[in-house]
Length: 310
Image (cartoon, rainbow, N blue to C red; front, side, top):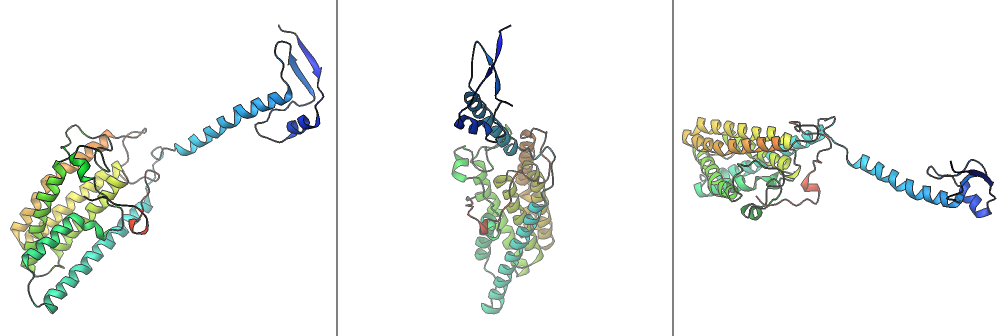
């Protein structure tokens, strides 16, 4: 073994002050006696500096990684705050639709004293079908249409693992703008022509369907809650079926028209469900409800979030 010699070291005022400084990571010998190896010698100051530089960054990095990489799915907790905000947004949107339709009924009945022109109703409901989110305080951004057509990723489309059978991006704007939108507008206009009123149960059932769809867009596209999006899209399908049933009671043809949109909605539901399956967390499949820590639900009306066009 290498011989070891006990050497008595006398520190100057500066070295003594450094060694006496309190630090959780500082190295200081317990007394003025230091063990010195004949092959490699260290001064107390060099030992202090070496230990200080090598220990602090390691500890800091460890603390940062442990605080920033918390997995919300390890012990998933229901995000009741998000549910409350979804409910508030739904009540707000439905109330604004009801108030708007009430004003229109008063305008056509008491002021203009005429029936609602079919083209006016069609354009109104076509606008509602595409831009209903203007009455919703949440950030209901849709996938960027131009990026979808080009096959690029955007919020809600190709920004996650998608099923191999996902339709081409150009399919979505064609369906919503040229097929689903006109069907919704025409069938709703038939209901207004039959009832003579905007504010009626079948039309409000349709508005409920649009409202649920807007909240689902927040969950799926903005917040990327893959599990909750599955339940959300099922609610979209059920609300469409309910609206079609309400339509059918007033005008069977209008009910059948709106019911036809369920084919596309069921396809979308299957796509969302398969996407949830393909995007598990480290703990397994993501829970089918909003989880605390996976996203932050906020009201766009009171923030600076910019929603994209559908």
